[in-house]
Amino acid sequence: MATYTLGSETTKVPRDGTLIMQDNGGTNTLTVKYMNLSFSDPGHEKVTQRIRGDIAGSRNGDQQYASGSFDVYFYQFTDSGSNQASVQDVCDGSGAVGSNWTKASTAHEQFNFDMVFTKSGTPYTGIADGANHVATFSTTTAEWEFSEDINGDKITVSFESVSVTYTGPT
Image (tube, one colour):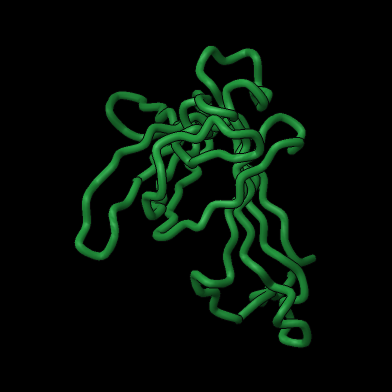
């Protein structure tokens, strides 16, 4: 029997994170200055097997989308200049993104992209946390919503991803 311990006991804070939206292969990227990122990765739905009303077991059902949201301060709606883009351009596949980015998957009609969320672990070398913690969201579609705010107008992005891959310290 093995005894397991936490690989890291260093609490992460928002300034430790980065979020990059990218096209297929990561040729084109947009680093996002985000706030309030949250996501869930439910995996497969649970299908409960019942015999005469009693739970007899469960099986994995259909794959579910990972989903989440984050906020960004509003800077501009779109930008068609070369090598410039807004978060909304990536979500919609518009502006320079529409003509320069390649969809992450052509099997989906909607414009889609990948996202790489990284929580830095490297500043903590020597505290059992010597590598970054990374969640890579594959084939992501997104919608956005604008809102005025006394502390600065913002865009809330809601997204769904076909899958999420996690890497980190070993």
